[in-house]
Length: 444
Image 1 (tube, rainbow, N blue to C red):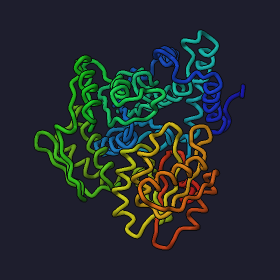
Image 2: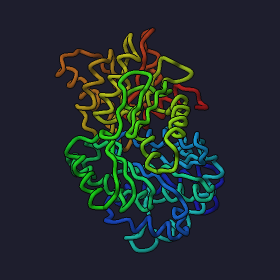
Image 3: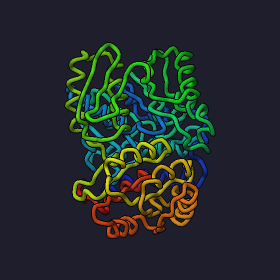
Image 4: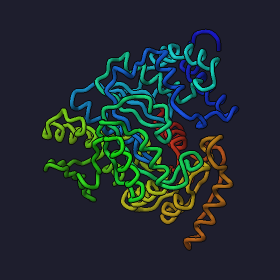
């Protein structure tokens, strides 16, 4: 539309329109540098220059790490801005200030501020034409600068080296994990993917590196050393207990024990990385940080991560979408679903499919397949065929039902659930959002 945005839908339709243009021209991911986002931020007066940013990359866990860090920093009295993607239900979820999604009017005004600069750049040289990701990143940084937040948690969208968020100069960087994902864009080995994600490391900026496998860790370590970035490897500086309550022991003798509101080993690992990122700031005494962490983790529930719907305890939603996150989810389900579970899944076409499916199929009583995102997800029929093949390969005979429409699939799977069982939705953030909207409290 040419006139001012009147509703949130107007603003988000504009941003979504940028995605469509990128798809139509095959523009996305083909640029060679960060000139477009830099040009856009320059046009806005570099809102990022005033921000203290913790920049988080990773194949899995980066969003959780940001949200845990947000909760802890808030307990420490900081006003925090958090940018994560994608959203589960509403666009405003991507942009959080003081732990709450921005209101629609605030987001509309920010998109209005960004639009004329985006359009001017799109009419100019191809090398500085902003993408959808550039525009949303610029909106986030503008919102946070205007709100005057004390700290920003900035989640990488894809990869790291060429991601729009990499135009900023952070005070701490973090790489949560490395797995085979987006191999058509990031590389076909963990080493190649690690090289892309380690592209967020900056000279002299402290880095926190999660539990990477040896080949990927070697790349991250080499990059940090080449950049002269002081770094800590989580495996060397902290230990995490395997039982509840969660217990963390950090280098220097600091220990934390807490009953976490978000269950599971993956949540404990991401919480530990969040604490380590805040330790890297080197501004809070150990005892103060420990006390704030215990308070925050005892109450911080992450949407779409091991989330039991508050209005229906028979439905559990988890955005697990990689092989290792599927293994972690399967392990947690052994205690969270003792009487059994049905699995509702949708996965993107670029996933390492068999490695993702196997651990979840082993415990499921029935599998429902669907297509949560029309452009990226596998069709329900194609996914169902592969589920049947994998289940046969691991010696299981399992009922598989394909329903293309994700809303219909969610309702049908829930209505068909045996008393005492749980419906577990996994494989896609988009599916998590659909299930929360269709089966959860509409206000969640």
